[in-house]
Image (tube, rainbow, N blue to C red; front, side, top):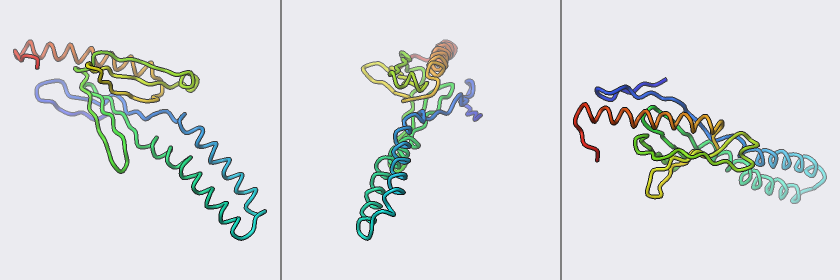
Length: 171
């Protein structure tokens, strides 16, 4: 657990570090197995240029159908702290978005039929004016939603109390 001091206020602690569910990798994994079986079956039945064509086509299919989805999955991370939620994505061009819990209006849970079967779902942080931040395909989404709702309420209470004590006006 990492603790960050914020002046006279309570320190910020990491509550959870999440990744999207691995359910997004089921079809790419099945494709990888199918390509391996097909190459194993046909490779020794073909000669010369046909074998090289098969291996080249298999490499392209594996790259596009397995490696890229794996890369996309592994590049997304979500960190939930007591004060904010940090959404990070990308390996080459990296992006980082921080959402302060005090700015969140509503925490929404959305689950498709496939996500319900897989035990995952999307948790959306409504920020007002049509803006949202999405934690896509997280495991145990109901638990994540409840935890975020509790953290948002606690942050609102803490911010209100801090403003009353210091006399600070909201922006």
